[in-house]
Length: 251
Image 1 (cartoon, rainbow, N blue to C red):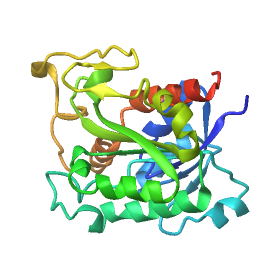
Image 2: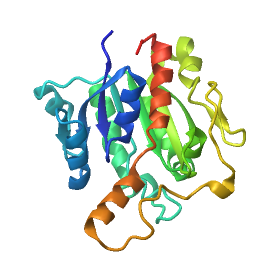
Image 3: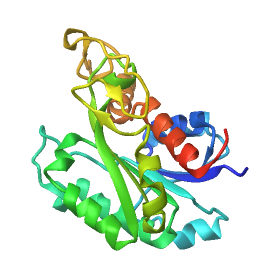
Image 4: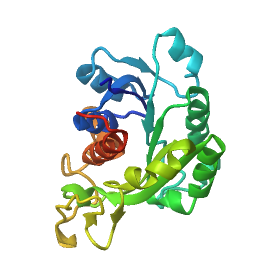
């Protein structure tokens, strides 16, 4: 069976694509990432995959001219205006407002599935807008907060994950898409049967460690920035497996 073709937006160093491809039923056909350092990482690990550098100029016509068709759009749009550490300008902010470009591409490309990731601040600063936008485009969605620590990481890293799909599938498949994705934070397990490898809070780190301090050496700054913005691949892998199960796609 043909794999689902993925357009990876705001790609960073490829955590989304790595996780989905590990699930077995997905193939990344294009990246869109503005940071040169991250594009070099992507080129090393996905040497044959087309890259675009600005979501604001990427269009369905561009992809069509390049012979690229898409079944899935994934990505974590910028969180700076949603984060509790930022100015909390929400989706009207310069960075997090790029959700508008994500929304535009969903409307132009009409993928079968959309997977969105962002910080928990989205819940109070724009989740309703995101869900309304998806509904207006004809997509239903299931979502939850899943920390990286729920799947074995030694840092907490709470994130909101949204899986959207055509409303035509809603009646027959809604429970299937949610299965394996849903997580109750205080229970420490995925409701789809995935047991979290969660350590006690005293063992969690705030974010992945690379080195002790940001010491100003440019390569370290690039690496830390890229890792800090990356998604934990295990979570999109589990989401990918849930989609495959619901769609009857074998690995």
